[in-house]
Image (cartoon, rainbow, N blue to C red; front, side):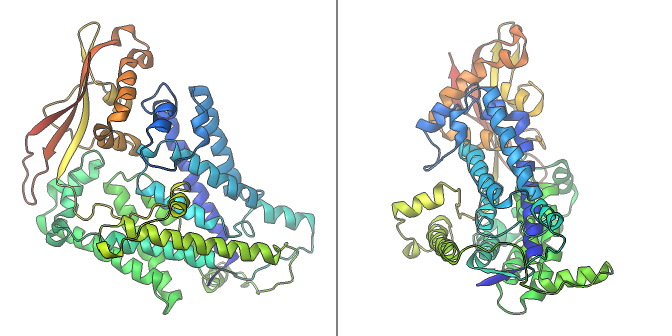
Length: 481
């Protein structure tokens, strides 16, 4: 077992809650495209042709824009209550239900950041996050002038599970990077040429940084992942190892965020860090602020759970640890075939419903050496050519078929759509209907579409040390009439 300081858990709750709030807010601008039956992922399509099994969501019952918006705002309210620590135990469970529903409704849009956040929130649900830095604690203290907090560290298998999960993400992301681009140092170069996710800064760096600099960034990234995994998982000198993680991880993830649009991945990973703060760290912070360190006591008015609920909690943690172990072995490319075990149906359900997938292989085994872009070339009633996807995602309806523009500025959700939609034919009917409703979204009858082609542009990225872009080829995905 491992122990966690109640203050660390309180700060962990605030960190998780902040990312949860950001997750809802970033979905609001495009919610009608993805959470309603007028969008490209209507609930009847995603229910009858699920991208992944075991998707569950109360958003499947919400079809209209008003209903979906109400659901999103309800999730936002739950996440705010969770972050503030009001009725924390209740809102921990409600927050998990809301997050599962947010992600389960639109599994086509999920990326590694969503899965990392789901895992973090799930494991934290087994821990008491409201003892410190919460409205619950404030209300209890105001109601009883003699109220004393229980400052004892919380000892639970859930603490071990959440730290193991944190370390495993780095470890397998590093293990799985065995492709040639990681060996020759070109992986970062190719990642920065994925214009669906590359930022303006990434374009500037890839065009101006010397070859040796790009190679150094590649090897530094994978080395840092190995180092962070070792420091998080080490049983030796943990206090000092975790302090190094606290200083190192922000640099890695802020670098990711500066160069690549990976959704909430960087911020979800940073939300783990408060758990690494020990009681000694909090004592040091107190002394720096001119305060006396807290004295550990158990003379508290805070209620303890009955013993049987504690045993049930620990048994549940063990069961999910075993299920995640199965998933980890089966979902990662580095695992030899002889170690891939058939997952019982119960394990598949335990992983699928709470979104606990364990495939940690970002830009791995190989960094992608081709870039793609989904383009709609639609003819309107007045003879113009427009691209409804470009209009919805980037604010321009210009049709571009001869090249892939630099730093497209997509959100994570549009990145997923343009990458995955070509390969999922059951969703093409919904995409067709969405394109034909373009004039309804613009409010201009002249934008009504009378015919269109959807093509997937494919271009080989410039090789390491080259500057010129390669010509694009087209793959026809869908057409009308």
